[in-house]
Image 1: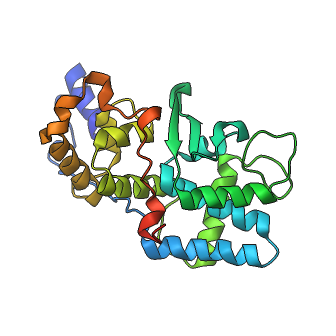
Image 2: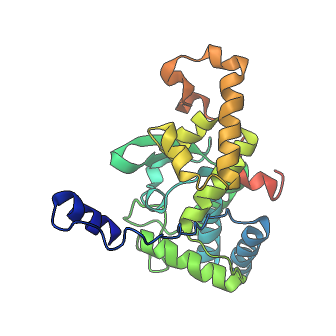
Length: 253
């Protein structure tokens, strides 16, 4: 409303804005926090319970999805569109189609690889190439993954807010703690510009934003920067950080 009246003043429709002397409070920013270790373990416990109680497909599938979110920071749409022929189970590499049809390769750790393999054992072989399927054998869509996570959190007693995208924050925070290279994080998150990484890390008071700035400063001041040239600052498929596993801080592999 204030912007509208200011426009009217500039165009000469009114001499002065009736809201000129009204001061508006700055909106309160809600910083999205990563999932805690306790919340993640509760959700995984529910998945393990399902596996032991005649719901092997759902339990193994949901656990594999949670661990893949933790190890890759994928968007829900990217995870839903993964096909079976895009997964290299031996090396843990996954080809992902991101925004703008851009492809990149991400890697999952040993724990996530084991969970994915277990899910594929119970997944029936059908005509669909999508790796994630429902109980009816049909491909899971983004909405289905979001509903699954909502129900899983409810069963696990996880009261904190957040959806699939919150796993993306969790991945970014854990990755920077281990790798300390914001350019690697930029590639793995599928951002074309490092500024997008800083923008997506949240408010300047957030832990993730602070860690990202600190990691960037340390990287730019490190001797290894001189060994890189231009685009080589970004990680490529041939040298993906194989040692990283977000699940390792829950249960060391």
